Length: 268
Length: 342
Image (tube, rainbow over all chains, first blue to last red; front, top):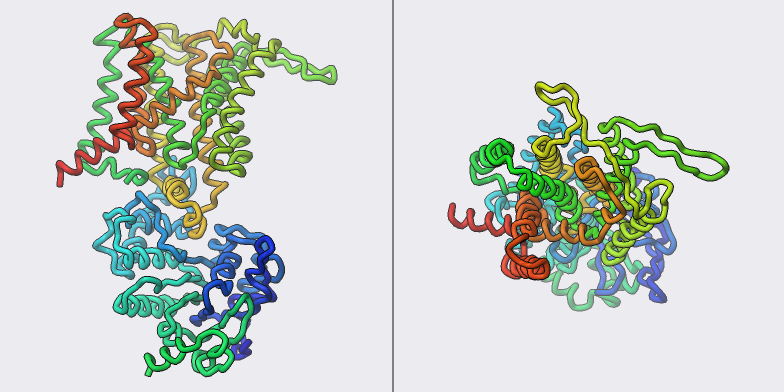
């Protein structure tokens, strides 16, 4: 682990282990995500990246270990509680609220930005109406940010694949979480779309969101990340800034192989 | 669309004038056609429409199939009847529970609270078991209540039925507070409660609350990831849905003046499900449209065909609707209007 940051990290994963049945999905994983950075979790398929995401975001239980977000333990919290604390995620497969328009999707994702409950709705209280207007404005801004403003009225499941991915990221970022977990956001995107995605992620970081990324697109990971954690078979085999990871013999030998070289050349 | 009520988009006319005009027409029926049979038919259809509106909240908006919905209807009917008749029963340990006869409005509130309370209980229990298990649980719930109503003779009179239930007492123009015994009075009362139930559900589903319910139906894990608390929203939806069904049960009890354990019959749940599904679940007008069609059909067919043939026609109509308009009548009409507009 790099001890480069003096302040307490935003997310701390300590000795995390996840056993699914008899299978060891994650053996022993520790890493930290400092605030304001883009941290990438990389590794071959089956290395435990998505499992780690599922545990951190509350969709799976850890067998052992501890996850702390802003210093407090996340153990036993449901995904919705974790989201309310400021940690949200996107999903690997494009996932939207089917049957609802793009705009409705954005509104639904802004759930945590509102607080109107039953009474506000039933009595159409002034504060609830104001909030509703506010949420509509935020939804418009959100769609504009990811370039989907002109798609607002379309059913979300009729969008092109790349557009659905962008909508998914926008929805995860909608509540302005302090930590955003993105599961392979670049999967299946063409180079232009990937370029747009990187710009979007940088914009989110500049808005104050910390980003934890699981990604296979090495060129993107190398260019975007401040810190990279390399997993193999449920264990961390290297961690550090892109330049160090890129040169790390263990990483090149054990996992990246020729892909690393390609990434290097692509970079140069 | 199905959730977000773009239903009202084709202009102010469709969204405002048309529904209120429709209500005004219905309100004029007892004046223009003071036929007791017609009013009786419309009143019982109205009570079922309230039931269908409440079921739609669960089935249409949160996507939970409750096949025990009649339980809340029956609970409301019994709660309201017992509160207004009063009762005196042994509750064990040498104690007795005595309730003196209460005014009807107390019974109406009791119906909503008792049904809503059981809705909460069922919501808490059932949303731990999902899918098919939830459906089975709801069916069993209604059956168990029917057994209780049949066998707890001291409280419910069992199969002998609760009789002599007072009619609804309301202030009536020119007459002061009276017991509503006339057909037209009960008709107007049911119409008013139906409109209230409709407006209540509309307010709900067009709000942040309603969006959360639809989000859960559309994609539960995504909904949780954006911070929507599953149990909270499903439980509250179940409570409100059950409370409205309880209100319908209360209207039923004070309208028919007699109830027996058959108010818990499975067939009534099925009727409500058919109304919601054929009309269009997850749309505001679906249960109303479906409710009118399937609430009035048995009476329209009466006298024209023997009962067996009536049921065949009823079943065939249902199958045809589901086959040709699988998403329901209202969504099909909306799609048609959109195409015409485009």
